Length: 185
Image 1: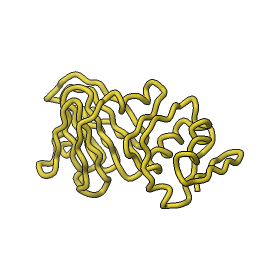
Image 2 (image 1 turned 180 degrees about the horizontal axis):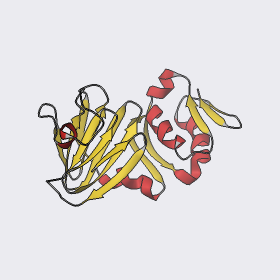
Image 3 (image 1 turned 60 degrees about the vertical axis):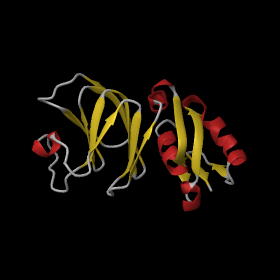
Image 4 (image 1 turned 120 degrees about the vertical axis):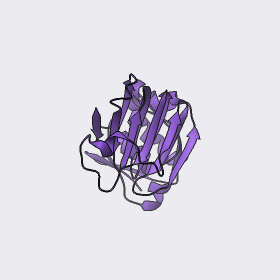
């Protein structure tokens, strides 16, 4: 009962089974479900876990953990693990102990299931990484200062080109379109 999320975002819903917990592996973290509904999103160098219902444990993967569902995957490391309940999320910077826990509306995190990507103070690089999963043209940020800008708002998956056209009115950037890509500089 282990799933390895290579990249992207996924929503999970599972029944309680303390004998065989459900584990999601996501870039250096483990999310252990204890009968719950939760969302896991990888964004640049961060993993965001949002709990819609129930409880999950979130913890860093052990450096010696093998890619299996053996004992290391089955139980959270005692030091540094977090227990999140419904209505809360953690943003964890991969490879560090830097994490921010906050109350949230889980429906915002789950809006991608209904064609909306919703953000509050997200780095533009993370927003662009998400939008790239749905865009027919690859979005590229070549300037690190642009990548660090924060974005609050909604991107409609069916209206990415309109969102791109509006970006220069909201940010001090240029949007340069080519046949197969769009650069934000």
